[in-house]
Image (cartoon, rainbow, N blue to C red; front, top):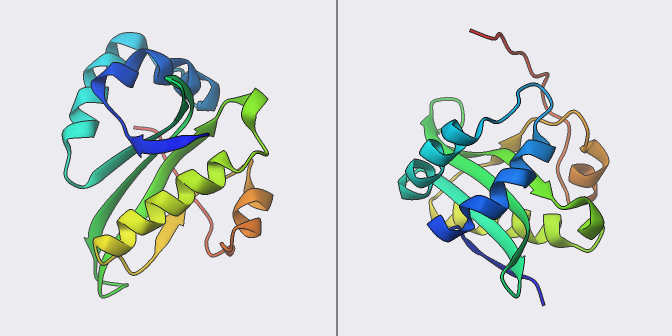
Length: 139
């Protein structure tokens, strides 16, 4: 049975290869990853979830929340969701999203949002709607 829980420092080495598989625009560097991982799990406004079975990490979700004017309060943003390729289509991604939504509700977020280029059908299937265009500028 798949367990979804908050990340622990001991998950670092199993999450790194998944983060490498997730990345398309950047290539995660191990030294940076090792420095950022403990800071993320300590942040009040960040949530790093792990999906695991018997100590084997199958996927992760990294998200944040913050205050806004447009939503009259807090919103939550999913930054990264990754499930191991051989374990996709088993409901793991959906469970990660459900747990993040529960966290967002518990923090009085008005909405959950994310940007995706590759997984639109997945998000549409779990009740998300296309809402905006994503822009970026590397600095």
